[in-house]
View 1 (cartoon, rainbow, N blue to C red):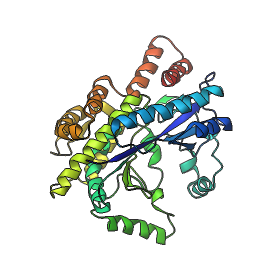
View 2: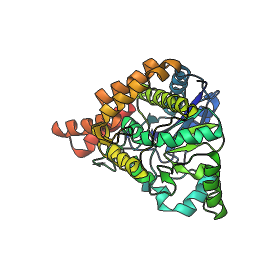
View 3: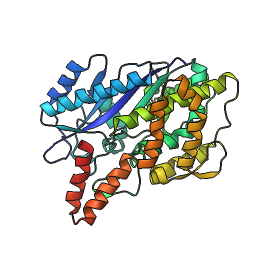
View 4: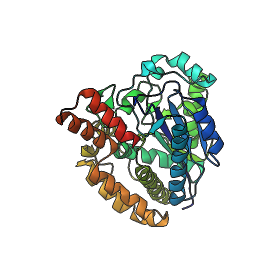
Length: 368
């Protein structure tokens, strides 16, 4: 399979002394990143306390791994030079959105005017994976089939269990923020590019959106490139986890693309079941029981993942990422960042730490 792959990652800029977010970071951080970005792109995000990296377009998972390491190193070094630190997680454990400042960009100002506090409180970071393949109609058919697997990607990437100083009970609380915006969550099933264009045109004709970049679904076609963009993932602190998730996504696409060529795409789960699975994935993470996308039976997510990895073994060989996709089993065995954050806070409290001290230990974990 010939494919292209690129990854966007959003990070937080943190004061290494207080461990709180830097609401007014030095512009020199962004300037240094831009100077050193090379073939990559590093830009502002909606809030000044965030920064976004975009890897170059890669043609293999091994190349993508090196690109992720390089973009992360650029941001970390630039931040360090200006007395800042970087955390790769989808929510800061105790920062308040009311203390943050939006980046002065015309596009962001328009969003803020329209969506008000729904977007102002969007103190969240994510990881978006772009994979290029096939023709437009095939990409839409494969995207529709991929919807059933969105909850699994949520489980494997979860890194947002603590919000505003509280354990939320969720492993990925970030998604609860995203759903306060329109056009988020699981997209509707579509079978052709013309169906997608019709959905865009309908909203454009009513002046609800400007273009397809304002469709913030968990997975969507790119408005600019011949790719399908996976958007449900939390930001992963460990680069190897980000690589593993990318490998899983590439192999799933290869597998489904092969089935599509033979007219054998599997029967898809209902919208209701996918959305139910998504909620349970957010809430329980790697301990989730979900409706199996293949059988519809209630099963532990680790068992569902194991069956999927076996089904993808040939695709992993063809895509030359057997080693990287094997790390999915590692994530399921040792837990996600959300599990480590939860454990760090609970263990600190059991050792007699105050709530404030326990939260600082969580931030230190993320900085390290």
